[in-house]
Length: 183
Image (cartoon, rainbow, N blue to C red; front, side):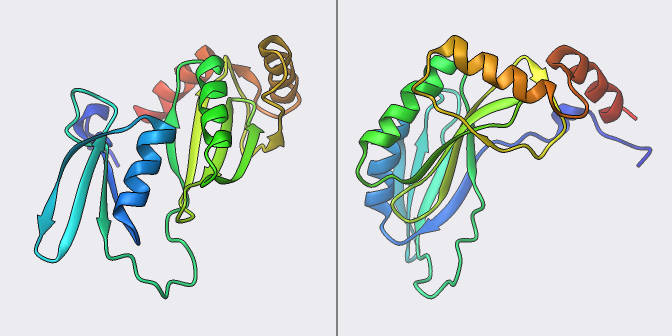
């Protein structure tokens, strides 16, 4: 499309999803992910709860009751959160692992990112990740042990990324993305 709008013309702000037990999910997101409830109320027959981790955002997540009991699959593929470094990723990994309502917890190296994936009490998949200093073509999904020392984890991630097509530094990839996004 030749009439492209500037990148900041559209930004992802928040997401909402329906749940079976609004209080259970709100408690889980507060305990494991450190969200705060910023508002709650009813809109007709729908109970809504607004949660945020950012003082500039009224809500980053809104949960609503009314998720159908008869869905044969979970329509949410994943809810992804970025952290600034490996130390925070390890912290959230420990929090998720310590909560008995967490299930399907796995640590993954994507080469360009290190992630944990897990499911909340209603089966919604959460990803928490941080960007590595490298880029490589996706998909890449290597299981990695976050109990290893940080230096070892980063060395393994670097080896994984280097073994993939398209390997380059994050800076090189960002320059290429600028070109791609402005074309």
